[in-house]
Length: 174
Image (cartoon, rainbow, N blue to C red):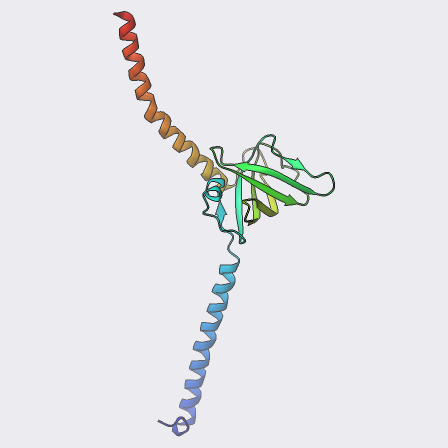
C-alpha cells in the first residue's frame, strides 16, 4: 500500500493520532525516569549494616544518635556521629554543615545522603525531631519493630524461668 494514495484527511488524522501516541509515550517515559531517579528510600541502621542499602545512591537513613558518639571537627563544620536502631546495628554518619538546633545525643534523626564503600553514611542533609513527642515515622517503626522482637524473646524465655523458679521453690520446701 502506498502512503501517498491515502485520502488527505485520513492521512492527516492518522499522522495526528501517531504523533499523539508517540508524544504521550515519550512524556510517560521521561516522567517515570525522573521519578525513579528522585526516589529516596529509607533504610534503618540494621538494613544498612546487613548490606540492603545501595552504595553511591541517594537514600535516607534514620535512627537515634548514640550518646558519646558526636565528634566535631576543630577546623571546619564537619561532624561525625553514630546512629542506632537501639538494638545491635550502628552506622557512622559524616556531615559537613550546620546541624539543626534540636540535634543532640539521644535524639531521633533522619539524614539524606549516600552510603560510601567503607560503610560510612555521608549526609547532605540532617533533620532532627521538632519536639519531645515527635519521631520520624520510619524511625518509630524501626524502633517499634526492634522492641517487638525483644518482647517476643522475653516472653518466650519467661515461662522457662518461671518453671525453673517453681521447681527450685519445691526443692526448697521439701
